[in-house]
Image 1: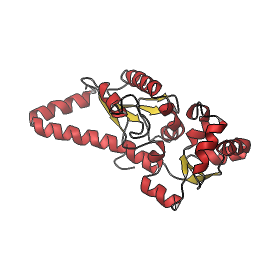
Image 2 (image 1 turned 90 degrees about the vertical axis):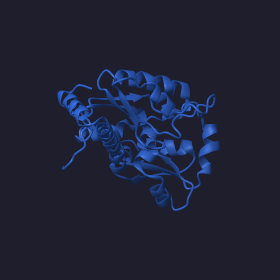
Image 3 (image 1 turned 60 degrees about the vertical axis):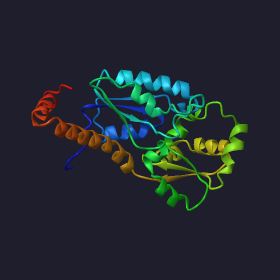
Image 4 (image 1 turned 180 degrees about the vertical axis):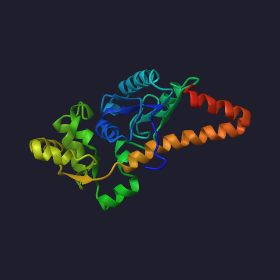
Length: 243
């Protein structure tokens, strides 16, 4: 592959709901990051715990690399009711320090990491769909922590278009083959039918690659501003592996 993006200088910190997709990219050889760290899935329901785990995992990631990509959504993954102005990007920025670069992929939530809003609108054909990824089912005891059957009956049936699992790793098919009761039980708990929709990991690959490209353009811009002598010094540092 020409101009393949390389993650060897990076560490990844991600929500655990995305571990199957990211591990697939790792096993395929695309995501050759120095380290991939996960927070417990479904912590968007417990913002204080999400913040604590995210800070801790970023701290660990710094021991492996000075460049870190956070795989979390921006708009929906962290909502602080006590301080609405404190968002996930604020938390990430607070972890920055000299010589450490931390960025977050440009997605609103994990569903958006797999399929864009425009594509979801095309798939749903105007229906009110409950979107989910394989991780939402696999880790449902975390994701839906505190959501009993009564609360489920109150919330899920309003999605009259049912539930659609955006599956890029063949998870739904594997479960249906080996343990179909899990699918039936989960659908029954939600009170709505669930079906898979096969997608690729192209959007996630693009979002991850964009962070590398943005960092490269930022470096080139700084080098031009600093002048040729400074740029040469920066290039020498990169070549020697120093930040």
